[in-house]
Structure formats: structure tokens, C-alpha cells
Image (tube, rainbow, N blue to C red):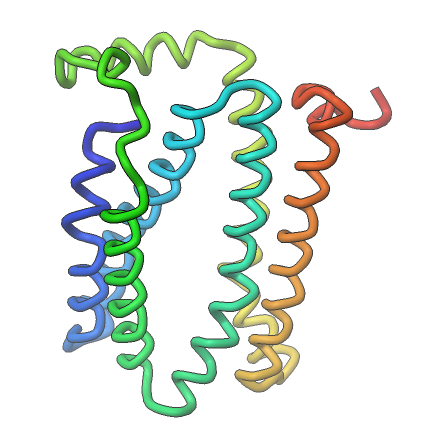
Length: 215
């Protein structure tokens, strides 16, 4: 896990939501949302790091599949809740709701998630060790293959997320509620896919699950 991920997630996650809610202009809001992406990415990385600390092999693959199912709930639920909050109040209220949920998540992490990496496995040496670790990882061909596969899947997801609102509302003329329902249906597919993967890993190796059926 990058050494900046922990402090970033702990110190700036909730603060960034507050700044977004108080943003006086669209330009500043866009900048804050861009910076906010780093805190969101840190949270995902930390979750995967915890799994890597406590499990390996098939068990880790099952846990990662379960986590991806939970992450799939967000695209399904968030647009629905966000649309309801936006219609009941305004766009700033959406960020205040996120401030509250972030605080709840922080409290849960502090009291329910202990340090998972044993002390003897914790890296020392600062940035130099991190750079050498990155070099070793980039030389690992299986890792690069899995990363490329996962990255291409995420690229498709983010292309969809970037253009779906315009497609649904501007071209198809759907309302906010209908757009939320469309997002929810795609999120449901993501959840089901994650659950299927957790079952497949019990019968096939993770490598086999990534190999196309025609090979």
C-alpha cells in the first residue's frame, strides 16, 4: 500500500466533502472533486491491502470478489439516494450527507478494524523501499497481466459513468429518478458478477477465471 494512502484517507476524506459542500463556484468544485479522487482511491487500496494481509490464494480471491460485490452496491444505491436528496434539498445537501457517512465509516474503522499487517512484515526505509518495491512489481509479468485485465474492465466502467448521465437525461430524456434506476440496474449486475466470481474461485483457479472461454 502506498505510504500516503493511510494519512490521505484518514486526514482528508471527510474534510474534502466539507470543502465541496462549501464550494463557492463550479470551477473550485471541479478541482476539489478531482483531488477527492485521491482519497477515494486510497480507501479502495486500503481495503485490498487488509485482505492481502490476512489471506492468500483462493481465500484472498474469494474475499476480493466479495469486496467487489460490496463496491458494486455503491453505483446501484448512490444515484438513487443522491437523486432523492437533490430533489428534497439541493446539491450541497448531497455532500453534507456524505460528510455524515464518512464520519460513521471513520468511527467504524477506528473501533472495528485493527492493524492487520504483523509488525515484522511492515516495511521500513521510507520512499526508497517503496520505489524498489514498485520496480519489483513492474517486473512481475503475471501481476502486469492481471493489472491490465482489471484496468481495462475499470476503463469500461468509467467510460460508462462519464457519459451515462448525459445519455440518459439529455438524449433519452429520462428524469432524475429514472436515471437513478438505470444506474441501479447496472450496479446490480456488478454485485451479481462479484458473487459469481466468489463461487467460481472455489471451482477454478483465479488464473482460469481470467482466461477467455475460447482459449
